[in-house]
Image (cartoon, rainbow, N blue to C red; front, side, top):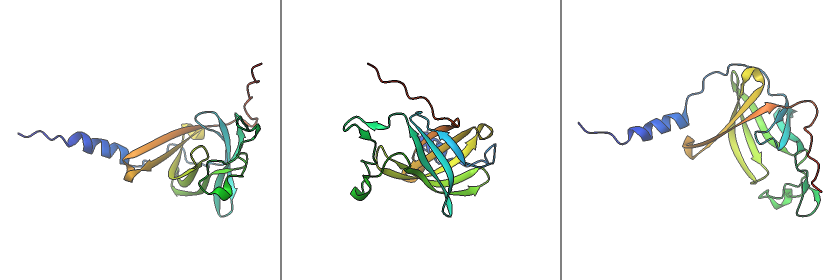
Length: 160
């Protein structure tokens, strides 16, 4: 009997591609969300014909390289590098695809890259899971964002 060395590859592929099961809590993405790294708060609200998520708070709002408010300096479009990070849309074209799931485009101002993602609510709507894949689903990354309080998190005082 021949042992198949491809079984682990097929198993990993099945896990990476995965099947979407309905989320445990259908609802709305609208509201304030604290990013997984707790460095930003994004507000999701109607934006034209769809919804979008804009940065309303960042932990480090001042760029240490110039002492000015952070800008979208890593954007590959040089004409957009002047945009302030506060107010920047990082999630857009958010459209519901099935109960509890949304498709969207994510923009990461740290890398200047866009990615197509899927979003689902979890924990009764208290968490939002954002998942993006590349190479036909072979490489995926997820982040979990938590509902943010109505007041922005405190920024630690600068060390003297």
